[in-house]
Amino acid sequence: MDKPDSEDASARERPTSKDVARLAGVSHTAVSFVFNGRAEGNLSAATQDRIRKAAEQLDYRPNAVARGLRRRRTAVIGLVTDHIASSPFAGALLRGAMETAWNEEHLVLTVDSTGDPAKEEAAVAELLDRRVDGIIYAAMSLHRTRLPQGLDRTFTVLANCLPENGSRAAVIPAERAGGRAAARLLIDAGHRRIALVGGMGDIASSERLRGLRDAARGAGLELRKDWIVRTGGEISAGYDGALKVLDGVASQERPTGIVCYNDRVAAGVLHAAARLGIDVPGELSVVGYDDQEHMAGFLSPPLTTVALPHRAMGETAARLLLDAIAAGSAPAAEVLSLECPVVGRASVGPPPGP
Image (cartoon, rainbow, N blue to C red; front, side, top):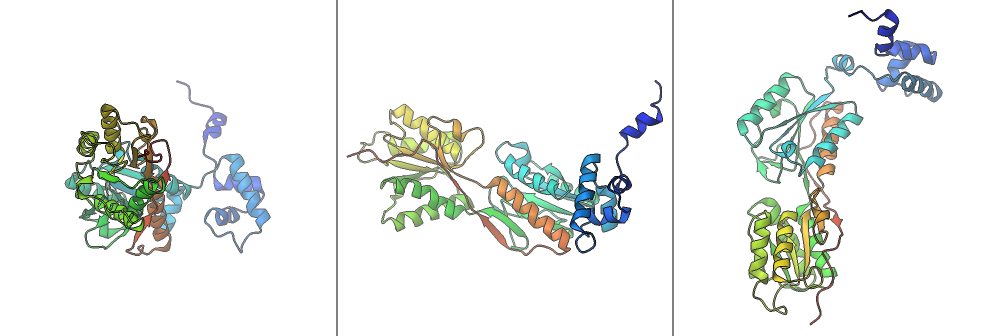
C-alpha cells in the first residue's frame, strides 16, 4: 500500500493551539489563556471572541491529556454502579452525569458491578490506578450502603444511595415529598377512599408511605390499615395487591384511588382492574411512581405517575464532583434531596358517583 503523501497526512493531523493563534493573529500565550480559563483580565472580549471563532473554524479541541498533566489531573471521572448500567431503568442518571462531565471536558468511565461487592472494590481499585479525578458511586434503588474500599482516597459523591456512616455527599430523591405528591393527585381529584399497593421494607417504601400519611392528615382522611398492602415491586405484586382490595368488594366499599409503589406495580393494578371489569379512571384512579422509561406512557390508560429524578441526580452528582475537583477539596458530607415531579397522564379522574 502506498504511503499517503505529506499533504494528505497533514490534512488529517489534529489542529494545534499554534494553528489557532496563527489564524486568529494572536500569540500562542493568548490562546492558552482562553482555553485555560485565564483570559479574563488578560485579554479583551474581542480578542477572546476572535480566538474562539478561529478554534471553531479549525475544529480545534484543547488537549485534555496535556492540560491534565499540567494540572495533575486526568480529566476523567469514574462512575461505579450496582445495576444501573446494565438496566434501561435508570439510564437517565448515567446520561445526566456523562453530559455534565462532557460539558466540562471530562470523560466518564463506567463500571457496573451487578451488585457484587468484590467487583465493586476491584472497580474502584482499577479506577484509582487509572488516576481518575474522582468517583460517583450510584445505586439502582435508594438504600444505605457500605462503600467499597478505596473511595476515601479520592473525591466521591453518592447518587441514589446513602453512606452507612454519613461520611460522603449524597444526592437522592425527595421520597417523602414524592409520596405526598402522589396522594395529592388523588385527593385533589376528589378521592377519599385511597389505598397503597406494593413496596417492601426499603427506605423508599417507608418515605413514600410517610408522605401519603402526611397528605391524608392534611385532608382530614383516615388511611385504612387493610388498604396498605405490601406485596413487593413487580407487576405480579401489583396484580395480587389489587385483588386483595378490589376483588369481591362492593363498589361503594372499595377504594376509588390506588397509589402504587412503582410503575410496574401500577401495571399489575391496571391488569387486575381490567380482569375485574373495573374501568380506569372511570371507577378507579391509579397513580404510579418512577415514570419508568418505555413503560409508563404506553400502558392502557397511560399512567399518571411521580417521576424519580434520575437525570437530575446524575447531573447534580457530577456537578458536585467536578466542583470539588476544581476546588481541590471534598464536597460537604451533606444529603441533597431532589424533587420528584408529577407526570400527569390519563389514569386519574374524579371518583365515581354514589
